[in-house]
Image (cartoon, rainbow, N blue to C red; front, side):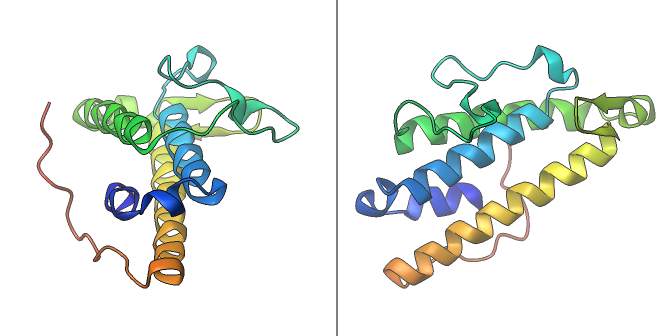
Length: 145
């Protein structure tokens, strides 16, 4: 659903901070929470660690739709890899950072809720701005490696 919202977004709306930034923010944290050792996290080279800035500073520049969709594909691969390895042992490992101490299973649910929250926000913006939004997606599309 997130991909569909990003794809549907017209350029004039994409270039508004609230759309490109919300999309990037969602994908940054998705990537971070999919990292089993959060202290080793680094986003792909195109992106920075700006989301960790305690002052809330935005990235140095707006990211293009192409860049953000590429980040989404990166995260889709990372998520697929995690889900394929999600044994009881992995699911029960602790995911610990300065603010959270969750099992991998718990952080995965937290992550899923965060993505859905932002996908819904983007759909609302699309509905408000262009009177259109993607249909509900009930099942993930087939994953292509």
